[in-house]
Image (cartoon, rainbow, N blue to C red; front, side):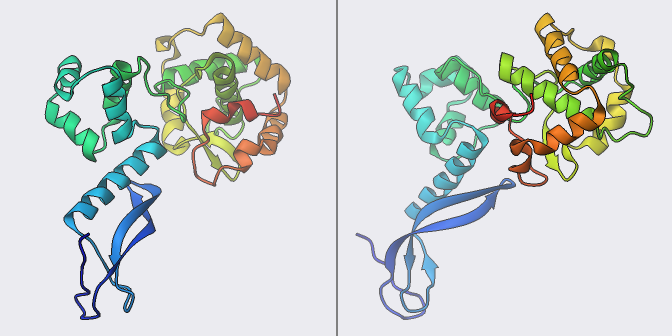
Length: 270
């Protein structure tokens, strides 16, 4: 086994497994790493091999937290399909160098992760924060208009910050996801002081108001039924506001963080 000596002259260093907390690509992660520690001064050192292992551990911790396939999962799924790296790269129409990097520590993009899942698992990645949809501002406005029609109240008000509308949209999206496995709008929602709110709502409010709902994908019969269910359950703005504040999935989400659609089954007010 390789040994290292402390560069400060304290003698042999000891190989230890330590936990490291860090931020990678804006995400907080925790990884375990084998490092050499000086028992005298606490200096930490590594080898090229341990540095490569740490890089892979960081990449995989990030991928796991983002819901991406890890390096080992890519390899295992590929082997279960009896595919070589060259064969999979040809099927996906990508360079083999890219596939080799993904299996050894480079993080794939979200679109490439979807492509990998499609070819290796036959299914795309689920997006926990957008209800498995791409966000559509015209559809958000279309849903808002239907909520207005069903409730008999104006929700897209001039100068309004969506204090109440966002709660209706949140319930509609999450109930739709709970029942159909797909949200209504593709919107993501953050837990803020005043309850669930459209993520980056300050940037979206004017864009939503200006969007052309006629360009949105039409609402299905099931989606319209869910909107009616939401309005009947929350006939007044104050009711939906107070209900949203009682939901534990809002209370248990760190302020400013996104609320996961995967917790839709935990809604208690509808």
